[in-house]
Image 1 (cartoon, helix red, strand yellow):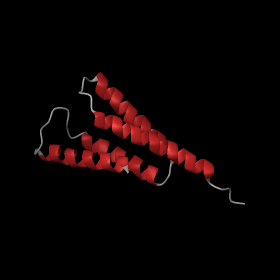
Image 2: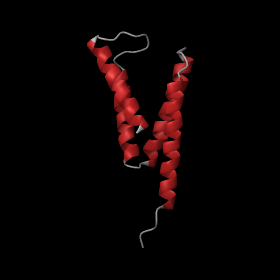
Image 3: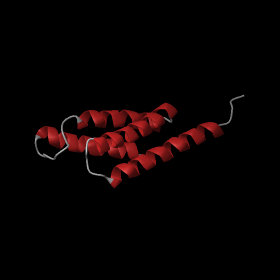
Image 4: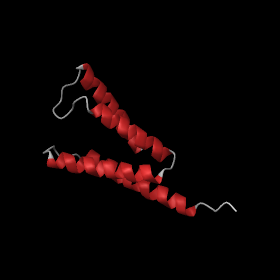
Length: 103
């Protein structure tokens, strides 16, 4: 759910930037690729893919590290998203370990 919200927000801001309606520092049309990656990973998490859950978490942490190294301002919202990505990944691994065996 969190990745879907993040992808949706990225898509909205990316469309506004691409249309020339919004001009903010740090936002460009590449945010549309970010939205596509987030949407694909969100779909994988929705299908209970452990690989997608881990990739989403790594993508979020990597993005935060990149933003910090690029000198961007600190955002509590990105940390909140990473927290929910980690909780989702943990829950998917728990759900997979509890499933009964088909015998």
